[in-house]
Structures are given as structure tokens and as C-alpha cells.
Image (tube, rainbow, N blue to C red; front, top):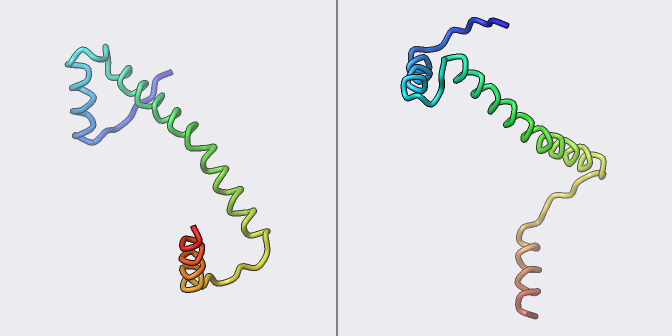
Length: 84
């Protein structure tokens, strides 16, 4: 399959430098590797996104929230720390 892409001058130079260094045999190889890494990143991030969405939904379904009184929270923490 042939796909034509347009790159900024900076990206085109980067691709060319990878080929010139001998790290890749062709421009296509550079782009194929870049796309493979993008797929891996997306696959890695998908479970995290799903977990966050599930946690958000669970929080919404847990009922009304109450405002947190930070002064009372700090006082309780200090009391617990002082008791050891």
C-alpha cells in the first residue's frame, strides 16, 4: 500500500537524518517505526483512560458529595498523629 504524506521541513530533515545515519534503510522504515510506536503508546494509554472513566462514573454514581472541611481534616490528622 502506498501512502503519501506531507511533513514539515523539520520532520523531513529528521527522517532524512535517520536514513543517512544508517539506522533505517528508507524513509518508509522510519515512518513505519514511528507509527508502530504510536500504536504501542495508544494501546498502553487505553486501559488507563478506561480506568479513569470507570472511576469517574463510579464516583458520580456514589451519591451526593459533601464539601470537605480542610480545617477539621487537619485537626483530626493532628489528633491521630499525637496519639501515635
